[in-house]
Length: 299
Image 1: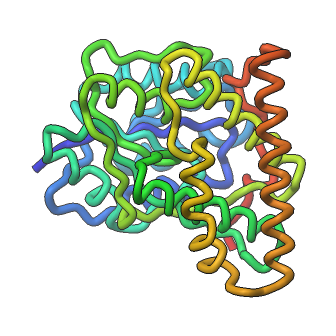
Image 2 (image 1 turned 120 degrees about the vertical axis):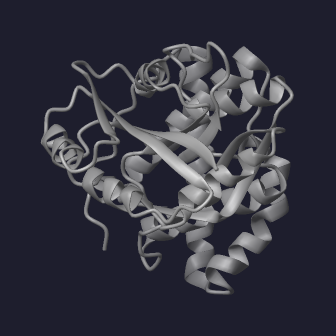
């Protein structure tokens, strides 16, 4: 058996947090044990705390940590790391819905002492028959195919809780900095495509651009501070898997080819904005502006 702790960082997630917790409590486990589920609720102004409390009343493993002010995901993660004693910790976004065997598959690589961090595969719940839904499926398919060759871990990860592991509060890319720390300490990354979970993505182009802008600014911050480049930033990696991703998602549909060109153009524009924010505006992206259209019930 190997034990782990699960941490969920939540801000105004009344719509999704119950579904995430339900999918977490319904995990099928054989060689893995979940010691505790810690939820850090940061500056919530909706019914998130009420939903969490209702689950905590039924399951003693659930612990609620409250931050009165929203200080960014990194602050919430640091509070969680200070609280838990588990040697393996998993960080889960509050809007995810987990397949029933995700935790077992995500944590199993840690039976190998050389593994420092593991991550699973995102499959969006968005319908791919509209532009924004297609964009979500297309980008996560690219992410998946790059990660198969060059691990890139995100949305739901697990890593070894190294001594005094704390992160700078203004860190934007929390998964990226964890990757950097693990690899620089000689540990390996493990992408586990069988560990599948679902999410919902922005339904407005403006929100999509803002999220991609935040992410790229975070990647640049990470490169500047730790000389570490996540694999999905590497253009060569992306173009290596691009043809397969296009065929997987759309085949030879002319409309979808046009959508793909539009997505690439939007991504280039978002990266340009992220570069402007980092190099010129010196903008702090550590507290993200939420995408309201992703805070909705699954289909």
